[in-house]
Image (cartoon, rainbow, N blue to C red; front, top):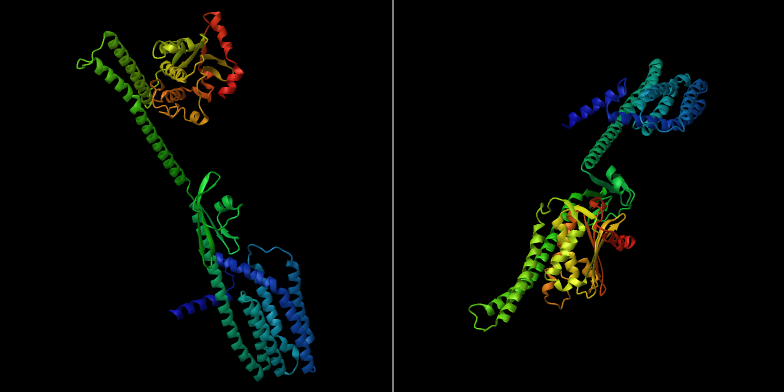
Length: 576
């Protein structure tokens, strides 16, 4: 098998050096052609210098050994050829290195190599009548010149072998002409030298060609790897020991090219331009440090969604806990009162009761039943909003009429004691497109929340148009107020603002009023804002956008002037 490979290489190299055309079909051939062009161009001046030195040295020896000679003509020929090399060098000096070449320059160089070889091998013809001295002198000059060219132009064997063969044929022609035994011997020695030169040139060229082929395949593999990494949407780079980038794909250059890399792995994803990247670092001996950034945006988004879902589940569980804790008092206490009163006046009771006491117990039962009804109404309203169709059809709702109805129902019921402390100032010429029942619940819960605040001062309910904001309904109390921490949680379901030491107060409800109001308002495009200060009371603002507000003619002048009660600048500042 080894002999077959050697025979194939021998045939390939022989056809290469003896062929009329220079191979340039493949990418490797074109790269070889370019490097041969550059090699010969860079060594022209050195070859011209060696030719001049050897020419002068050879002419000195010939003049010293041979009395009658024509060496001057040989010197002139070699000086002309050396001058051609110098001129060609000067013409190409300073030019940028070409990216591709056609091969014409190398063909001309091969022709010049044949001329140089013939001129150098023709030395015996110009030495004189002494055939032995002429062949010895020619052999001494041809061999080192060919060896020197082979050492300089290892990647250009066609030029080297053409020079050596031309010089040999010129010397062999003189030996045949002179029929010298010394000349024949020297020619035989030159044949063995030519064979050794051929083997050396072939070995060097095959190694060079193999290196070029391996380099080309490595570059193709590198390009294939870079292309695969580009398609994988991964940022890839290789760093050397000094931390400099050796290889990187376009994505790495765009995203991380402007920043310094520590070449250390990072556990958490890195965020760049809204994209999360997971960094991986691997040190490979003989290669460097490989850094790969993988796009994990989808994983981070999924993790974030899971985290949000977990937080929502925890919030729901906390709300459920608060609900159950609230219900244990909000429902059990009224039921205990009802059960106790009913037990006293029931038929199985042994406690004597007068008609007045029976009436008192019946009133307590009715009062506690009303509290239970109110509590259950809040729960029903809250759970009702879980349905997508909980809002009825929008209609034109008279704002003043709805507010007056809410106030009347509250003051005729459980909050009758506050009837004289509610100050209402609402214009009757304003209406809005919204769900009437939902708006009524919003206003009732907000006013009820103000009534439960413990305010001894009048509770003010005002409404009016604010330019650039819309219709604003303001409910203000002067009760105990809320701290900033309590204010942040005011709209959470089942949250109570009552002090921690206050165990239960039937007037405080289950903590759903503001939560229900906020959700109903958001569903219709309304806004609810609270401003509160501890010890100075709370002000609630319900803002209806201008696009939903409708005006009608005022019923009388008194109600028409009520719009001016609200300071627009102050309201706009407070409601944001």
